[in-house]
Image 1 (tube, helix red, strand yellow):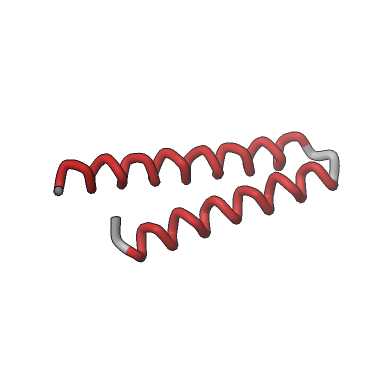
Image 2 (cartoon, one colour; image 1 turned 90 degrees about the vertical axis):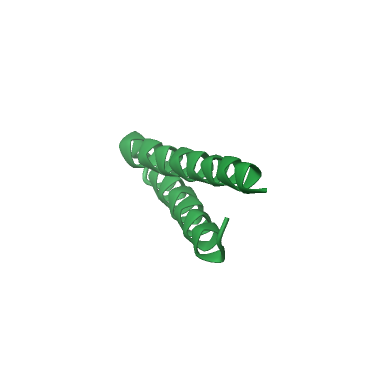
Length: 57
């Protein structure tokens, strides 16, 4: 996994957490759920990169 992929995944995760927090604070379930989805996407991309790395080694 390259550094840029790690940074991108971390940024996506943090943005998702922020969006989830804003949704909770505003009692907006749609925004809260979008944040959770963004975090899940970030986790899946991270897992995919780890699998790629495992096969490279």
